Amino acid sequence: MEIQGTWEKDEEGYMSFETPELQRYYELVTDRYHQAYNRYLDELDDDDDAFYAAQQAGYEMITDYKTINETEEFATTYTTPGHVLDVWYELDEYSGKRIYERGFMRIRSIAG
Image (cartoon, rainbow, N blue to C red):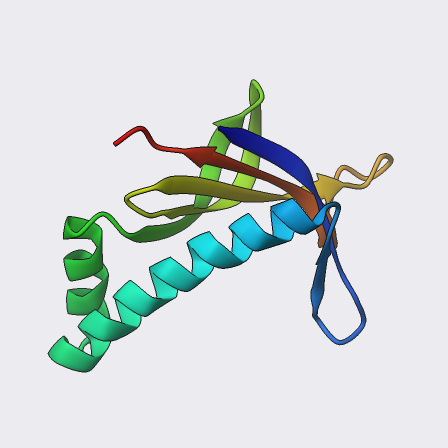
């Protein structure tokens, strides 16, 4: 399964999504990641230790450049044991700068 679509932030910072399905999967993946990370943070009381423990369990959040659709994009990638979520930004047509209020999203299932 793969879902792609767009997202946009309003003036208060809340995200809206192209489809309800995209929103459900976005919330599913990010909630699962944050639940796992926070559980390790509570246990270990250290950000780095929690990051590595979550990573060992299959949960990771990385913000870096990534090739998406054959283009180098600055993206945040959430990985859980069941899904990979990539979130990246729209570029201004003239300046080429990122528009941090809207962008694109791709969610893929990981065969398990």
